Structure formats: structure tokens, C-alpha cells
Image 1 (cartoon, rainbow, N blue to C red):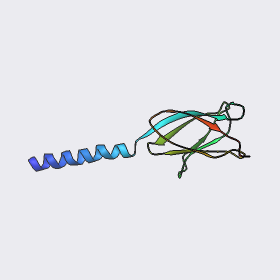
Image 2 (cartoon, helix red, strand yellow):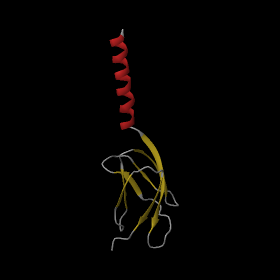
Image 3 (cartoon, one colour):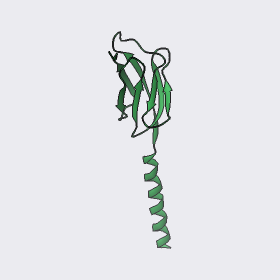
Length: 100
């Protein structure tokens, strides 16, 4: 009986620990044009190396569900691609610079 309890506790701990690895959360943010400081509509916001993506709304805002170890990749024609690692915050303001 004691072995059964120990084995059960071991697998329960393993299950709980594995949930943290795949934890996801929602982040929000705004993409801003570095030239005129206005929000940019229709910008692709992608989790690098995945198909998880969204586009910004008319004011440059976005929301995206991401894994804890993600890298946000923002790109648009005529602007430098920006890569930002997801850290312990939920709001991201990303300034886009023209690619001259």
C-alpha cells in the first residue's frame, strides 16, 4: 500500500510539472510606426517557428495566446522585422522602424 501511494504521488508530481512546460497565456500589445508614432493596422504578429499568428487592428493593437518560451516576430513590407522574446509581462509595445 505504501508503494502504491509513493508511485501515485510521483506520477501526480510529474503531471503537474509537465503542465508548466506547456503553459500558455494571452499577451496584448500595440505596433507603433517609429516614424510618426501612430498605431499600424494589418501588421503580422507571429510566434516564431509556428503557425500561431494574428494581425493588428485599425489602431495597431493585437492579442495572441503564446507559450511561455515564445519569441514574437513582427514583420511588414518596408519595415525592419522585430523579434521580441516573451517575458513576464502581458503588454508589449513594439516600435517598427522603416527599412531604408
